Length: 132
Image (tube, rainbow, N blue to C red; front, top):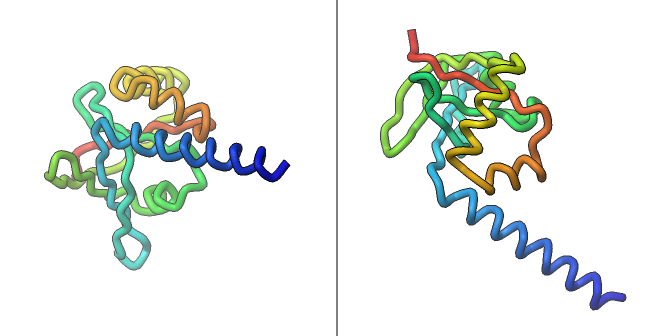
């Protein structure tokens, strides 16, 4: 029995490593959110361009970066070595969710599907509008 458990653990470790590696193969952006004291926090995530704006999405609305974004929607997004300031606008209409799911699926392919299977529940797309 212990040998069986070791094989299961090894398989999970390999699956986790491959999932992480695959997720890093397409663009990974860095989102900087700010707490009430103005302290910045960086989070690596995926981003897509849709209807002229960058969009991100949160897989779990309890994530710290999303909670900070709700309290202070002024964020920075770094893509391709360039950081820009935005105002974050969560959009959870069924039409927006479906459109953004399709945009992420098109860009990130099977890895997006796999991440969704493992971690995403009721994802919320967030439009990043140019900072006012």
